[in-house]
Image (cartoon, rainbow, N blue to C red; front, side):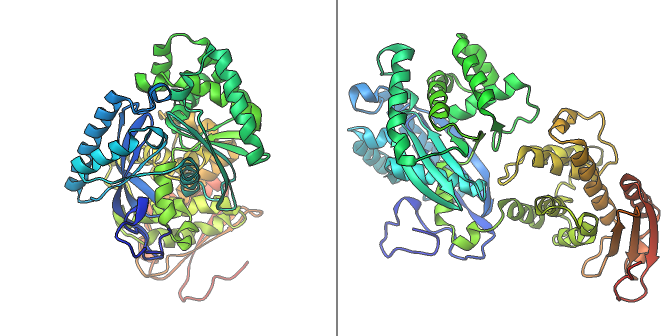
Length: 522
């Protein structure tokens, strides 16, 4: 089912009521999703821009439903009781938020356990929540769609590890290709005899049997799942990486192998847990997940490895989106939503972008996209105290829950927005992050910020701001002001324009246009 199809039956399946009936929808109606996994049960409430949803609420309970499943064939009794308690709480929260009914799916543990149907019935009777049990291929497809929600144009192999299973799916050209499922979840691997050697032989055999079904997969490997994220945190700590955002964190095969050796050689799990910042129950799964990842990299030999914080829950939203909405840029949609919601003058960001764009006429589209995003966001944190506004912008941007944004691009946007409010960047607590940019990128971000800092002085609605013209070979920056904007060019505006020109190493010229004719070309 997609967002344009409404089944005639009362039961709309695992995706509940259609969320995106209007293909032009930008705002997402608040919606709750529950994922009953083999290791954890999680409620996520999405809100905000439909193409780039924000997490209004996020709660996870580690239940280990799949623990002991290989031996007993049933759900872990203690985990079952904890899961039922969590689902009662989630249902009450949903009713309090006015978002019931929740959309709930269950994966490997519930679908494989002999008492899985009885558990779902018990949940329905006690909470009114209907759990839809999906098979492994559907789980793989939804995880892949979740990656595509946050990573437009992504291509490569998705690897989603849960407690009792691991799914693989290929993506390319905005579509999901071949999907496979496997029993390589850590909770199941615990039952394999022969210790590390026995597990390694078992993991390698399973992956070698799956590899022909997928064919060569030497592009990017996208890792989805809590155990992978814990490994990524350890990799960040080992490398001294300055930006602690997991989504779109990139790793080389060499770096991952070094981190996996570090995990294997560290017997003190408390030390690892302190590094990763995860619960004891999650940390207990990491060593075996590391064994799986080592073999996945060996078998598929990916070009590089990236962490995706988006997975099955986000895939459930993507499933319902009409294609027109899927085609939109999640970064720009999120920035538009933020401007509409928080800026003092919504819509001014578009005018600001047009005003400063002549400075970046030769920039690639990827850079212009970031400049557009910066202009949309330039005023959304205006409520912050003036003394801390610049840092607030940088902090929010580098840590914001946004898709379609590499780490270097986060830092570029953060720095541009910092320079929107201050001329200097030295001596802040964010300085270590700046090493993710080279000198050319640092300078470009400063120019963007100072251009916005000046352009924001010409705060007009519905009237032309004027025009900036940049001649890089001659190092001349011209400002042609409209008649309406002329009174706004006071001392502070002039100082900001001159600061922009100085950053460009340019000679500045200011001219007043008495009519609306285009400025002459020298």
